[in-house]
Image 1 (cartoon, rainbow, N blue to C red):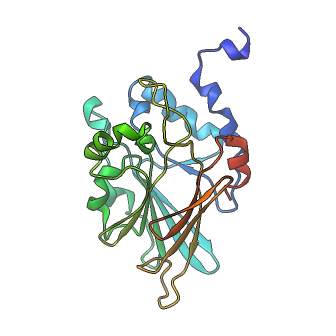
Image 2 (cartoon, rainbow, N blue to C red; image 1 turned 90 degrees about the vertical axis):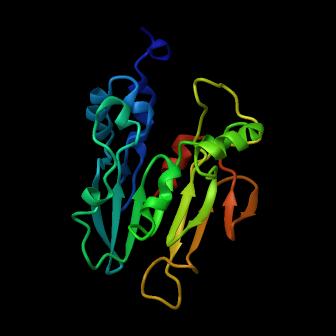
Length: 231
């Protein structure tokens, strides 16, 4: 069948192979991988050239400092009897001298559990509310986290709005597709990379707005453009 008629959703993700980053490309599962052919997705995702973190971590050296990326499984695993998120297991190989712990966890609502165990948490799941009128519902289902940057105890949480829609409700209204480029700068009065004075700049194409004390821009939904700027 012509490519545009293929029902293989893995084909839709092949542009992710274009993601290039100096220190590596990392990924985690979300809730939807659990619904259909979970084992197949777990085999397929690493073929896209990324390091797949399933309650695991990877550390890199940047300018003489250690940065650790920690990835969790999704809580939807409970419904199917699969491996639950385990921050202790995921962090077991994080070096004691790590300067920055970046946590990848698809659903933002559990952020409070990870305060003190990570410095920055990156999530998605909410689609930014998808439709503004649904924000109260989406917020209630996700402990108030809908989109943007939040302080959660000692943790900074950033919730990305995603690039498309939930297939149960094929409409976006008052929200935008988003591919984020976060720039982290070390706070001047500390040797750690994060803290109350951490500057997180989110950049891309579009109109620039101000949110939670950071620069945030509405981004185009062009995956390949985002891939070029994702280093």
